[in-house]
Image (cartoon, rainbow, N blue to C red; front, side):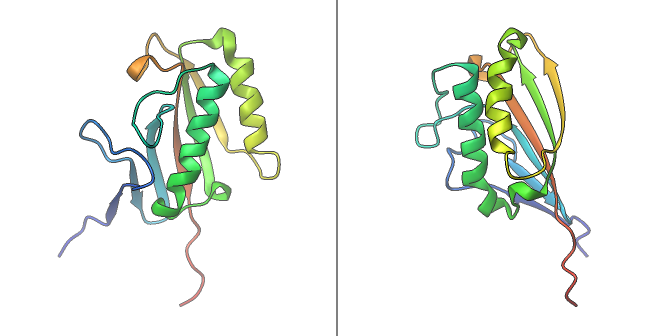
Length: 136
């Protein structure tokens, strides 16, 4: 009997990972999306630009991948934000506010770090929760 009920999910809408990790692990109604930096979905290279531009690309990529992961933005429960530039965090917050104009924002933690993959200014990891289907 297989007791591993985890689903290891990828999205064909995004560039494949360059290293060995799973972009999204779903277990029951919970989904863990690996930290995302602002990669161009076609080339897999980091997009140039400000903290705001990189943050918007992360959210755009998340929206691209969510149908493949089986979640919606309404089911986002937590976000962990890592940045190398807290002095530019106002740019991050401007983009963040736009993402949640019409839905409740998730819990959020923000951490300052010395460096991020590919020289990114920001990385975000996401946790989703999906209520069980009430139908029998």
